[in-house]
Length: 263
Image 1 (tube, rainbow, N blue to C red):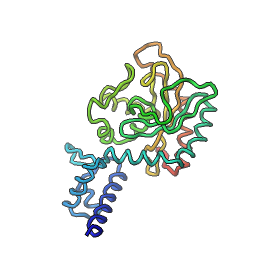
Image 2: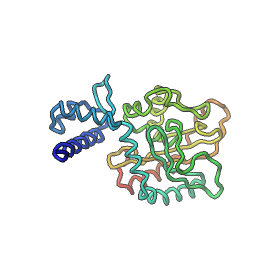
Image 3: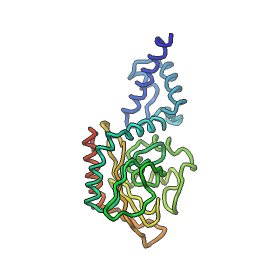
Image 4: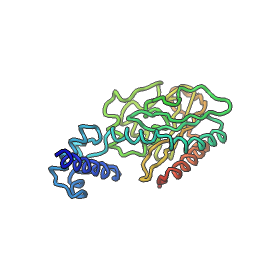
C-alpha cells in the first residue's frame, strides 16, 4: 500500500518543485497541472503539502506559487559540500593575492549569509566575518548580490515582516521597499556594495556565482577598510576596479561548476 501511494506522490511532488525551479517567477496551479498532466485537485493537494513543509510559498494576491524558504536552504546545503569549496579555494587565494584584501565565499541560508571560505591577505584586517558565521543577508554585499538575482516573490518570502530586517549599524535597508530599491540599483550597477552596513569602517563588493540555470547559488566578496567622511550618509563609492576583479573570480567559479553565466 505504501509503495503504491507514497512513492508516486513523492515523484509528483518533486516534479512540481522542478517546474517551480525552472521558471523565472511564480507559477499558477493551472499551469503546473498542464505541464505535468495532473488533475487540478491532485496539483492543489501536492502544493498544499509542499507549502506546509516550507518548500512552496503561496502568493494569494497573484494566485501563484513560488519556491519556499526550505527549498533555498536545501540548495544552500548542497553548496556547502566539499567539492564547491575545493574549487573556490584556489580562486579566492588568487583573488586575494591580486587585490590584497580579504575575500569570502558565501551562500544564502534562509535570509542570512553563511560564509564558507575566508582567504586573508598577507596583512590581514580584523573582520566579524569568518567561516561558519551568519549575518543578515540584506546587510552583506554577498547576500544582496544573490538576492538581487532572485524573483521579487522569493525575496518577499525571505523577508515577510519588518522583524526580518535586523540592523548592525545605522545603515542598511529597514524594510522590504527599501531593500527592493537597493537590489534594483545594484542589479543595474552589476555588483553589490556594502558600506558600513556590517561593521563601521569597512566596505565590501560582491558578485554572484550562478548554477546551470543561471540562478545565484553563491557569491564572492572582497572587504576593505573604508571610512566615509559623511557619516551616516552613504558615500556612493562603488569600487568598479575591485568589483571587476571579483566578477572575474565569480565567473571562473561559475564556469568550473558548470554554471550558466549571467546574460
